[in-house]
Image (cartoon, rainbow, N blue to C red):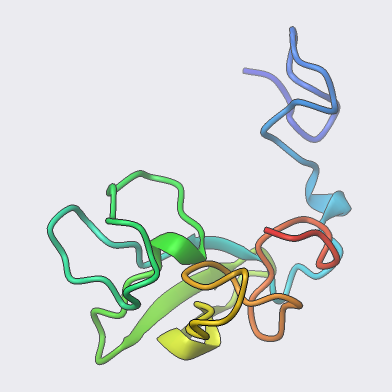
Length: 118
């Protein structure tokens, strides 16, 4: 096994690598690592979210509100919070980001750099 913190994986370029160094995460206390994500057939939190795929990695578009319209998120910094869906998923029907992450981020960051659009 390679040391992902030591450098890019063999055969990958830094620009295309799906991995990033923990040190590159600018807001670890707010950057999502794992979360309650929806499974196929589960009711979506927002009508703007695509149908849930049940994939192992997830973003706001997969965030499930199965806990009374809230869900759990483990952050890179190590804390786990239960957040209401409207603090995680953009519910504004007029927003270009509807059904995805709220931008600019407030409670949850989805990229290593909070200034990056998820």
